[in-house]
Amino acid sequence: GQQVMQIPQYQHVQEGEDFTTYCNSSTTLSNIQWYKQRPGGHPVFLIQLVKSGEVKKQKRLTFQFGEAKKNSSLHITATQTTDVGTYFCAGPERSNDYKLSFGAGTTVTVRA
Amino acid sequence: DVKVTQSSRYLVKRTGEKVFLECVQDMDHENMFWYRQDPGLGLRLIYFSYDVKMKEKGDIPEGYSVSREKKERFSLILESASTNQTSMYLCASRGVPWGGELFFGEGSRLTVL
Image (cartoon, rainbow over all chains, first blue to last red; front, side):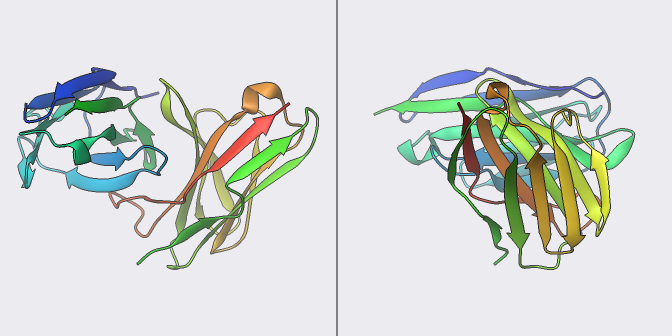
């Protein structure tokens, strides 16, 4: 089945710095979603990308979908303590759009 | 707001016990999902349902079964709990069959002794 890989698994960031987390799929994706899970919480939807090369911004978060629709990235500028949590990407399986496969996530900690 | 409610936040069971995890959503969503979350492994799909009485296996269905008798309720059943099923279980629902966001419940942390 499809695999969605995320790197890095952990990201330790100084407050105010930027960082990027990456998501790679073994197959072409029809769309990709990103979720954030705060410590002790449940995953919450952030955004969905559908078009090749699409870029979307949410305040300090920039999401990008690769031209080949096999990879995606999340870039956070000027990291704040509120950015702490685990970020997951998720994509539907090629053979079954109902099934959404999640990456292992990038867990972000912030040094004040 | 969509609300997905999982019946128990924390459960402790013994090996061999039958365990029911209940999930109810209040937005008339057709799709419902059960995931298992373990450190370093992300969310792994156990089962999903795209309609009442319809179910499909996910990536790790072994040792689990599900029931969807009503649209709003999706139950996960562990017929005979084992210690390797100690985990966080997350239920989710989705209002569209393709591309829509998942709404997650708060999760049920199951410990099997």
